[in-house]
Image (cartoon, rainbow, N blue to C red):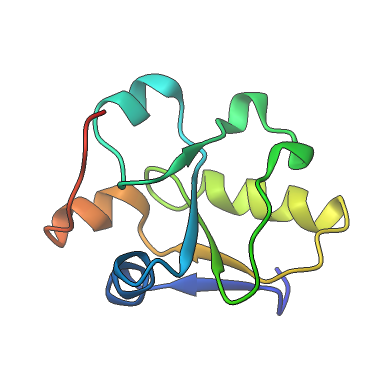
Length: 109
């Protein structure tokens, strides 16, 4: 895709989240988000995706996009690049399926 986009493993993503160094954006649909999500994740469903809705990513933090299996977040990343996003984009390898399989925490709020 681009050198601006990196696939990030679960362990790295968890470290960033635990250290407060990630802006996590979930591009799944509302019902998927409601069935369990990463704590603090911002829901921006791909079906209504607008690159302008992306929250600012403060200096020193990582933008981390994720979905169910890492496919939809690729579409979102491509859209960000097409719309001139200049920061680095990280995608969660394996998405929520891999996150949950690794026993990483999921919240329901």
